[in-house]
Image 1 (spheres, helix red, strand yellow):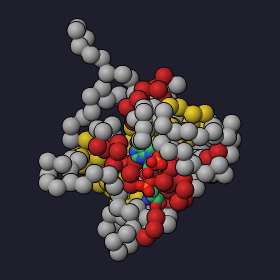
Image 2 (spheres, rainbow, N blue to C red; image 1 turned 90 degrees about the horizontal axis):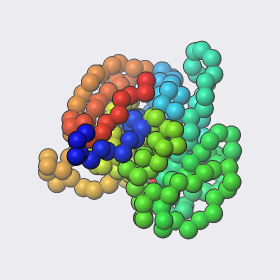
Image 3 (cartoon, rainbow, N blue to C red; image 1 turned 60 degrees about the vertical axis):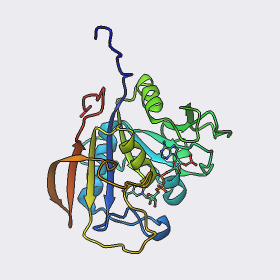
Length: 234
Ligand SMILES: NC(=O)c1ccc[n+]([C@@H]2O[C@H](COP(=O)([O-])OP(=O)(O)OC[C@H]3O[C@@H](n4cnc5c(N)ncnc54)[C@H](OP(=O)(O)O)[C@@H]3O)[C@@H](O)[C@H]2O)c1
């Protein structure tokens, strides 16, 4: 690349989520909604295993307390390596008794220079940016250097919005369940900055649509591929 600036290598980023027909990620107040059917759940386990790392925001940990482990019993074939678990925690809100701090598999807490917090020794910390939010490009560069080649971003609404707005998404899968949650406070698929016109929305291209369980699975990629987009590790 003569004279050019080579982008810092980063892992492949796949965003996955399940939503209701009205685009909600959860019930009012953020209470977890069982939107996926059995085949979709197995698909997500396979993605976790294949990508090698699973990432959520601290909001999801506080509300859902996910283990982020692979439920190998839902998959055919032998048990593989457990993925690295990653949590974005810009202001040190991660509960000390969160299940992802149980020490059962490698776990990274992504923080910022503004995070003043001691974490249990069961997790590594990785500082990315000055805060208040974790700098996603810096984080991905550091994860690449730590040997991570793929990241499954599972949510929630703020984290999905941040990855999309930062053009750091290489593939997205959305499972749409045939249910309506309704109301005005249930979180939608993406939070973050408001859009006032089509200049501000994030455009994706549909790759495929598949009937799955009682709903549909939509596979998408960005309309404008991100600079330095790495190949899929799958
Ligand atoms: N249906 C699904 O597939 C699915 C999957 C996952 C989650 N969910 C739902 O999503 C909801 C939680 O979503 P949420 O929006 O409240 O929380 P979230 O996106 O999980 O976490 C957001 C928090 O992460 C921290 N953060 C640090 N750096 C960030 C960055 N660069 N970008 C964005 N966030 C950053 C911020 O907290 P600090 O300022 O404290 O650092 C922020 O408030 C829950 O209701 C959960 O059930 C649904």
